[in-house]
Length: 306
Image 1 (cartoon, rainbow, N blue to C red):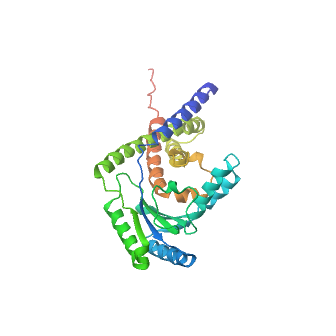
Image 2: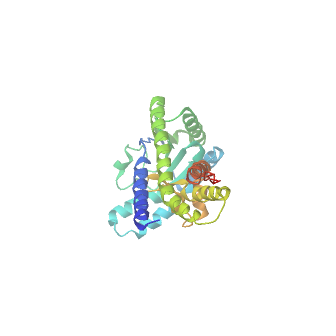
Image 3: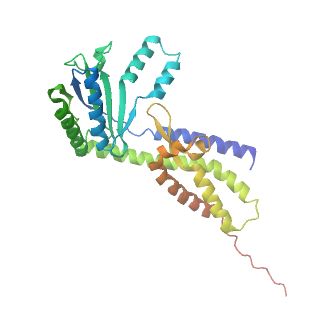
């Protein structure tokens, strides 16, 4: 392969990956939480409240992720932030802990104001009825408001706390209403965007790895039945698109060679649901391409001169 052709393939690959990143944005939507407070919280009742919340959410399949300690450590080391902004963000992160039910796309954020209101209470967006409270925000991570299942979970969770703390539990915001039309519209648009993004990411990566594979395999004295599976297996592993974090909330599909072997096994555990679909699709895609690239040569009958 000439150097000019190699350079062109490399540039096209990165251009396509940039396009993929833009496609991967999809259509955004706003997540509005349901919010309620538990008022007049003391050190003793806060411990009881946390036990009650943890027990109730664990029964619903949630995992307690606690505080975001990694982000806290990063912000403490960030000298670019102003001291006031850094202190405010650290105060927010230190009073919050997150409970997540990934399979049902539910998230509960605990915010502890039991030691008093923040220095800028207007950031709450409402006027609390107590100076010492714990705020609980319930999110369902889907477009179109809460689903019927999400509303049922919210009612069960609220009921558990009301049984334990009675009138100290005050509803601030009820779940946003279900909007099936918005859910269908955004889900369809993002599904199409995800498929297009996957195809662009896989094709762009294969343009790079596939060119190198063809260059090497055509110089090896291997039968056709061996070249095809080698091409399909190696390239499927290298190009299978996986989700990569491009920003605070921005995720885009990128080829596996951006992760392997530069990351650890925890990354694959986190993207297992996506990977279980992406790798088989990549294998089928590469197998099809291998049939086009490696073809048996037609037999040419030798002429017999009498």
